[in-house]
Image (cartoon, rainbow, N blue to C red; front, side, top):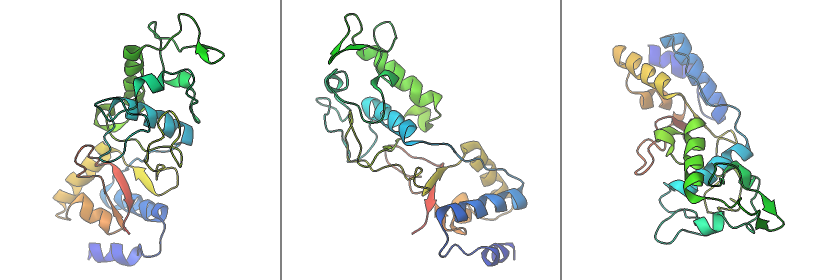
Length: 221
């Protein structure tokens, strides 16, 4: 009867992603006393900055590569990333590049100021720190979509603009989802995915081969 009540109370047909998600989170709070938190406040600049960091360090995308690729790898080429003539789109190079002292590099015209050249090891450390401090999953290695459409320099890959920015996806708190899973088992009410499906939602990246994401939620087609 409880499942039927949910279906009668909310029919996902014709509803937007946010309407579906709001109904799901509201039901979880009322029925299972769980407040499932979701990410908020993303901007194109924030998204693109972390996308560049991801594509420079990891690139977990199966078929997408940067326009300038590191030889023998699938990541952004260091010589392109550190080229003072590369014109960065939306994100300032000072957000990611670092010198040997750990400072942001400086320019004189189209060249690096003397003693202010980017250092690869320090830049790699900066990119990793950014991804982890901003809460990117899988210890900072989960995929991060572009903030632009199309993606711009210094990456310019074929990855699409993040669905989060267009209100078509959300990341839910992993610990809260684990609590929900426990409550569902106790109530013999199926899995988290069964529960999401009642609201027209699913987790398309749950079994991704290189970057599985149990927190990423979208609307079912």
